Image 1 (tube, rainbow, N blue to C red):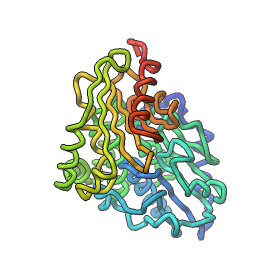
Image 2: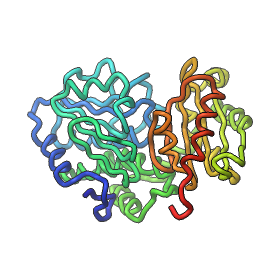
Image 3: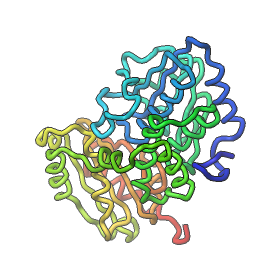
Length: 349
């Protein structure tokens, strides 16, 4: 059994033995241990916030040789460059090749770690913190709680078991993680326990208004123009998903170049698409290579988009998931359209 944020034990999460093994792995580190923290490619608020918040907790425990990293280009998205602990980030090429302990955050599979996945084999011990229901288990010790609203819930659970006293710097990253993965506490995963965890984090003195403005309400004018263009080509298919409706749009690398914007600005676009009243499922297809697309899927409850994504090589949650599509755009969208009716949930789900 595992413990959700501020709440009672729930099934399907880490066992007491897994929690104990994770605590022992950290507590048993020698004084000169090298610890490497890794989150998934194209990191979002939960990945970075959980990783950096936990990193600061390890520093408080006395871990001196500590690095944090993620695969791909080393640039941190603008909304998260101010996070406490960001100075611990190193380019993937500079990451410890043989760490004593590697801790992975918010990655549902090894593939999400890119070229850094080899650290799972070269590390003395590997620990995985995650909350994706599609996570089948990888690494040495798994703390995976599909009932947790964010990976930061799991990270805080481990910090508590390690006896780390929460401070404002740690709480900032964990709060960013929690608020981004719950959509500012608007999504289905927002439970009383989530609000209890948020209250605990706020009690350290962090300012939620300032955090929300930096994370959600700050965008370059070029991104505003880009969003307008991409939203202008959105397509509504009311008959898709067995009549529950699909709305989708796409963005190309040429769009980013034309508006002089980095790829990460598109991550927020799904929120502008998912509000479409006539569609249960929303989708944004973002070009990441010559014939490669990063696909974001959202559902309002009629369709399990996690099963859609898993069937197409990705993963996620019932209401939020993604995968990497390959081939022409119309074929990628067709694969989604074909999968939706097969994953409509019973009306009483």
